Length: 446
Image (cartoon, rainbow, N blue to C red):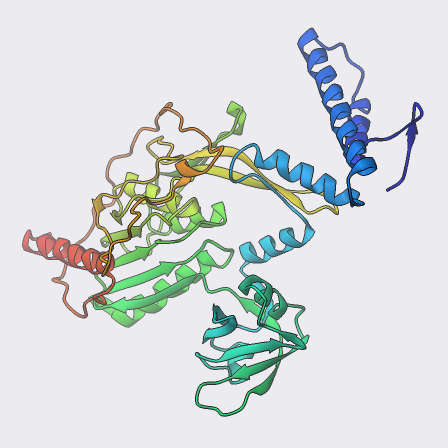
């Protein structure tokens, strides 16, 4: 770090200097007493910060790295605000952008860690790993010249990702094959499949695992494919948002819009009135007015809750499962030139009825616990309200008038077909319920 002498003393920190320079660069105007007092307080606090930094640099038992100290101070400052505000160093910022974009340079395998080794859960179709012959159940013991034993799963995945067209050598142990063998793979662009679908008899089942830039287009493609397979047997949609931690706000809005013809989807409200934004649906319903059920649980958070809340408030879907996580805040990603970015909570979001679910969650229309062989000893589900420094829930303010039920859900046909897998009780319940609604509608002659 460059040493700058000010009044015979070493400048306390680059952060203090940058902040000081920014303050001095402001236009000279007459400030009211309260504003001058606030500025004086900032200068005093910056001096305090500089004193502590200087003391650490001079007297700590080991030599310290100045940039790391500054990053740690920024990290602590943001963490003191709420659980979701944070500092992202350049590498973490790049990883976050890849996650939201939904594509990265990699191999195309879903993996887990087992007995200290990376185990292939499944190679993704039409990816370098699939073309190289990787199979489910393979164990990866070495990445280039680095043994996997001793690495965390995150560290191993980081090594498998890399620049497109670069090569990696995997040492693979395959059950039933006597000796380990080497597989060379050329990395390519891997697109995260955030949307998966299948047919459940006469119903289309759509699972969204996260909200990335690929989610909207993935949903449209999945619905088009499955509806074409069913033809006039198409009776409804199950939208599975369980354990979906969220993602991009615009994608949550797009997914909600896909099943709504009109009305507000969500509003976000910041500290100042002019920071309020409302997002409305456009004409077009991928489910064609047929019944829709949304599955949620305690792992459904943020963007997932936007979708569930919008469809619930407009009476467009039945929300089934257990109460959601309760993350009703919006984080803005603010890049810092050459220094990564900060994730800062800038607003709360509200469902169409004007309800904030911050630290409260979405209550399902029908509560259905997932059946398990054994009940866990600790039945408490972790939620937003359990996190330290979480934002407090606000009382309902200026609720948005609810539109009349415009969906006129068509429930024709008597259902039938395949049943859900017995182990997924919530899905099975939703399928039976939608088929019952369709049968009742048909008997009423509608």
